[in-house]
Amino acid sequence: MIRKVYLDGEMAEKFGSEFAIKAKTTADVFRNLECNFPEMRQYLMECHEKDIGFLCQVGDEALQDEEELLLSLGEGDVYISPQPAGSKSG
Image 1 (tube, rainbow, N blue to C red):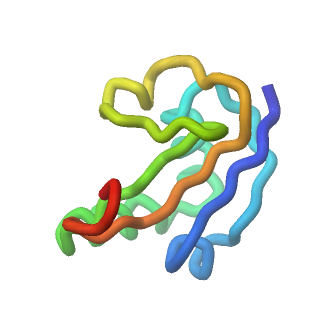
Image 2: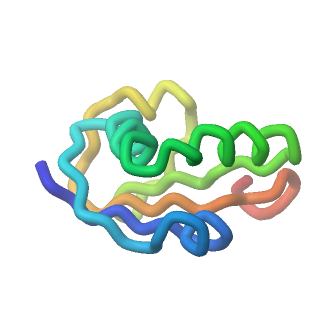
């Protein structure tokens, strides 16, 4: 299924803010982005080192566990936003 993917914050500044991606899972979304932006893997690792996580949301539902990255996506657009540790829902 083709769905809209929106990146926010610094991630959007570096890689763009809106994409149409064919993906069954959130992991597929990240793989697709990495194929198009090879430097994204390094960016994600640097964010991890700086205690910056990511809020991933499908429609109105935020993903709560890492395991959900592998589950089939529900209906709705995908939103990915950097969240510094200690911030709301981070």
